[in-house]
Length: 120
Image 1: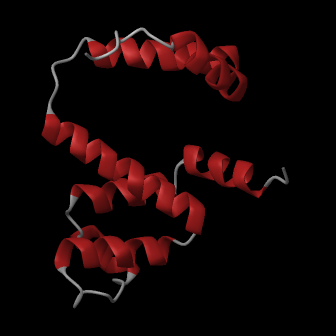
Image 2: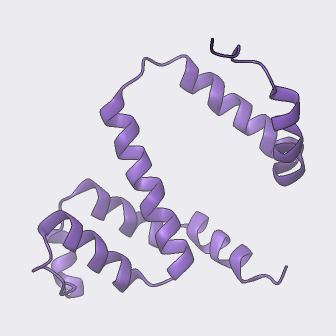
């Protein structure tokens, strides 16, 4: 028998509230409500999981060249390990490549990099 979906919410909420703060927790709740109101689309879910994976990898390695190499190799095969020159970037048409390039120059990425550099 599967546990009810609301079992253990209080225990799970506490660490999230501590990590995100009240504003972050409220934002997460709004996002969850919006997500719950939409029909499940496995292909869209997979695409967003890949985008999240790419963003985490770029944020942690802080190397756009390495991120582009990895994505190009993944989408084109291992023979495509060279990174295109800046003038060739407009030829990259894959949604993951476009997304990671946009993220790399975003305020969100810069803020995340600053947080990762802060001593803990």
